[in-house]
Image (cartoon, rainbow, N blue to C red):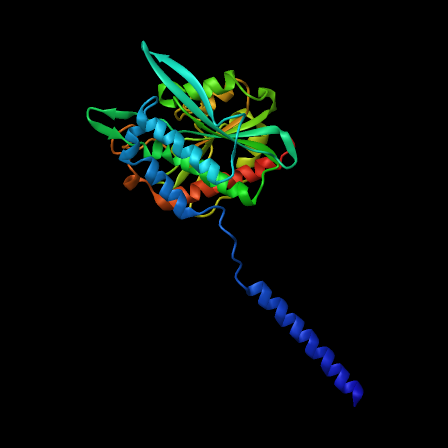
Length: 309
């Protein structure tokens, strides 16, 4: 009798364990978001509002944008690279002088503090022309807002390599901010292992985000080739000057790093009807695509961050 009772207890226990295991397998998994998606949209909406007057280098609107970036870095515990966030420089273009400032944030790496990944976007745009404000929501308030998403991500997930969050000025005047950065670097250029540049990432009729630069680096090509994005977005290579499409190698601030033989990935979308038009407003971005694009870029960063450069 005791033997039968003991056998039943064992069978009951096994069934119970099996059922618990099955319930764990079938239980839906909820992953924490990489960043606050509502804040991402709030930032791009704010930076592309009329208050910032198109963020033309050297104007009051650009100064407001610079301060907005610094305030967000401070809120998100991003330290300045050096003694202060601002890197001041002067642009002389067409006999006109522009006073400009890069904004440079720093997050120390947990494993490779002397090796740096520069994540960049430009905060300047076209300003006011003919009485119309060119707000530059996609170009490039989208990239700057993504910098804040990265900073938010790093608060809970410290990077292995040190990271410089670079908000460049003077991109629309000829990539002047990034050129000044690489020519007057606070850190040795040899210690910068890669630049991830974001310029126009918030809208695409085809839900397609391009990652340019894989032609020049085998490790980055491997990362992108083997990356599986969600079914909500397509991550494509190309625009490297070898596939018959426009060559984007020199189209934005990543070019300054490429010229110094620093590997880069440029994330961007095809030009659209509002490119460099006063209609590049927040109302015309694609919010769901934008959120997926930023998630994708952060996920790519995570794969690059574990590489032994």
